[in-house]
Image (cartoon, rainbow, N blue to C red; front, top):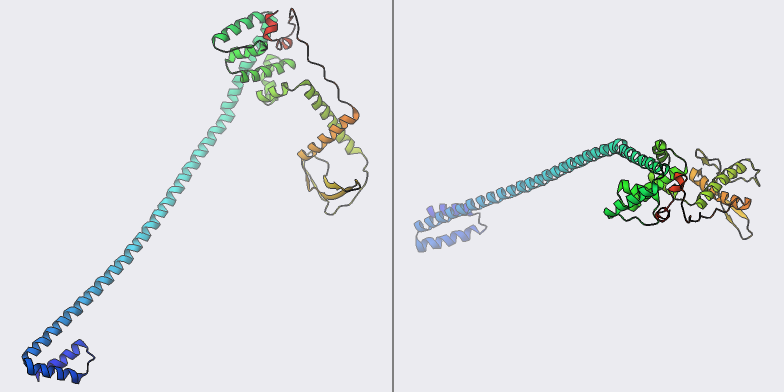
Length: 349
């Protein structure tokens, strides 16, 4: 019958797990109560609704899969964007580093030019001015006008708010007048010129003299060493030569053999150093040979031996006392003497 066909169709559509006999009995009762045509319509409506629900579920699944795929694509794009940004940042960093290197190279070229041209030219110009000051000072001494020149210079410096003390020497006044700078720099320049005077350097040879002393600063430092210091340094230098000569020809007190006693001698050295210690009996225990002798090591050791040599040979001499300040009339006889005269001494002349 139509009801049986509809029932079978409904069972197939809904994939029900219910017992077929129970389903048949249920709809038989419904047909008797409500009529077969109504039941058929109801089943058709249920089938349509089931189909709509199935379609809706299928569409929802499709939307979910599409959204999921879109999400994966978005994550992939974000990842690609991060990689792209990272690559761009890396490229920018490399470009910045290249720019820094180029600028550093440019600065290095400027530095090289400064050292080879500007600095050399600057020193040359400075030495030329110092030579002129040196020559002018010697001329004032020769013309016997030093005192008047100093008085005039001191007055002019006072108008520049540059104070010249009574114990300032004549040569420093000349330097301050010409350079119009601070006392420290004037002190360095004046010390350099005084060093040249002490060595009887001619004005034309001043630049060469300063260069031979490795510049104004070293020239000043050497000049400002006390006579006692210079004498001691000269004694030590002479004693060092004697120590080296003596050790080069002296007989060995004892010959010993040490394991792995190989040593490398740097150029200019001739002695090997051995590390030793003293025991309770005052004997030396030789421990190890220093693998390499350097010039600095040998010089330091020789210097200590030279000190002992000076003491043993009693070569140290008493240094003459500083000259007593001249009283009364000052008689200027040479530029090297005039350079030491103070303002008080000149003005009292």
